[in-house]
Amino acid sequence: MELLGWTAVELGARIKAGEIRVTEAAEAVLNRIEEKEALYHCYLTVDRERVMAQAEQLQGRLDKGELTGSLAGVPIAVKDNICTEGIRTTCGSRMLENFVPMYSAGAVSCLEKAGMLLIGKTNLDEFAMGSTTETSAYGVTRNPWDISRVPGGSSGGSAAAVAAQECFAALGSDTGGSVRQPASFCGVVGMKPTYGRVSRYGLVAYGSSLDQIGPITRDVTDCAALLETIAVHDSKDSTSVKREDGSFLSALKEGVEGIRIGIPGDYLAEGLDAEVKAAILKAAQVFKEQGAFLEEFDLGLTEYAIPAYYTIASAEASSNLERFDGIKYGYRTKEYKGLHQMYKKSRSEGFGTEVKQRIMLGSFVLSAGYYDAYYLKALKVKALIKKTFHQAFQKYDVILGPTAPSTAPLLGESLSNPMKMYLGDIYTVAANLAGLPAISLPCGLDTKGLPIGLQLTGDSFQEKKLLQTAYIYEKARGVFPLPKERK
Ligand code: GLN
Image 1 (tube, rainbow, N blue to C red):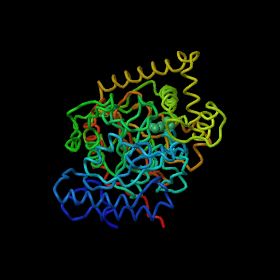
Image 2: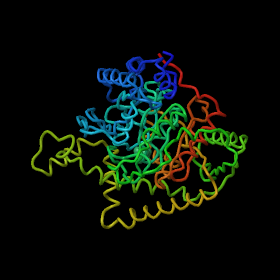
Image 3: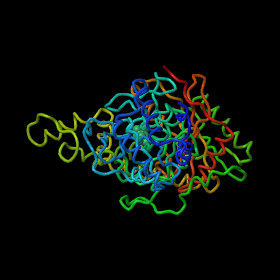
Image 4: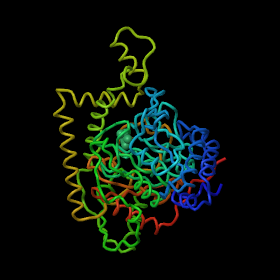
């Protein structure tokens, strides 16, 4: 159906003009989901009746002139670690198989306020720990570009759903790259905003000092529109920042003259796939042709980002996941003798292997004997990385590089070599450690026909500059194709 090919903003405009009814758009997306889910498995929960009732209601509000935003009536998918009132939120874990939140996350309330239509909850790596969506307790999601490959992770369901036209946009969460990397593998746009830009209230915490909710969309304009919708101060999140510069669509102007772009030489070194490298350098050339100032520089500390990230993220995860004990939330084992065995068995049966590994690693680095040697040291490295970026942004407006060292791996390949999988986060984790905004957008296909992601990183709260830079590239690149239709 033609309307599925439109961007979120295009659909929003047509809904507003009365050319398309919300129910029509909803119906088209639901039919598409029905047709494609057996193949891709992007969603964990889709409730047709609820969606249609919601669509009717939104159309009514539009007819009355109550909804005026650019995305009113547009179907959106939400990662299943973001709480939705009355709708199951599993975090891809057995632990929360039957968890139905009593409230919606701050970001979801923003979507509702804007009149967007929540179409369903998407698959993810268990508690957002992973890079492939394979650690989900509910089965793998397949990459719409090649179903023998992963969609990336942990927001793989969201990215695959956008690429497969099973929604018009989606929300993901990014602790170390989980919005940007799956966006890169699925040939769509994904952005991690500055830490504090989007409310974390109701996002089930993984690494609280690193987590941010971000948009996954078909293009940069949709990304700006969705960010504008969710970047709202929330008094329920103490790290949410009040700012007046949230009109991101207005930042999408042409012309890069005067923009200074730095390419870290350390991002182009060993470990980067040759085809990805060539595509990134070609994209850089596009900026040069447009009149941007461009140079390679030495960012430094790149090799320390991964160990620091996994130390801090695991430490915070071990603490955040303590609450899942069989009493307060979630799964409780059927048979047990005494309280301690109940805790032990509930957690052993409720969590998967990857999550258990992280909890163990995190508890270890926080334990009395090792706290200074690992956790504290990682915090110091985090501070140094932040400083390194701060210095770089004295000289450059935007830092350009790859999103991931390779294109999407085959299913099964990553979990058999977890070290390689962790190293795959090398270009994304620094933005989380330093709290910076970063965006991934498609910049070509490799010889296997898989999308390659270009990552642009900006200084704190410089999302406008970042989006503008991405927009200019996108304009010069032209429309990026959707994956080929599969029967
Ligand atoms: N792949 C990283 C991890 O497993 C990032 C995950 C994320 O951003 N949620 O921790």
